[in-house]
Image (tube, rainbow, N blue to C red; front, side, top):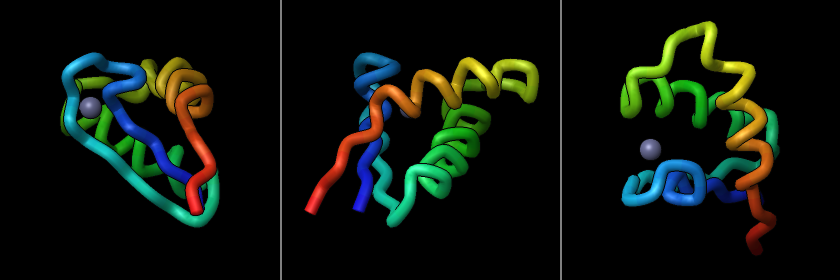
Length: 59
Ligand SMILES: [Zn+2]
């Protein structure tokens, strides 16, 4: 299982996501970035990089 805490990218954000694969977690990150942080399609490559760096393996 993989985990992503948005606070690792956006300090103070309480959103946390888990998914079986990094690819799925990146999708969660994109949706959250759009709805939670006002990101647009042009921002998504940077969002993918930031989320990708913050993903951790969890049990
Ligand atoms: Zn967030």
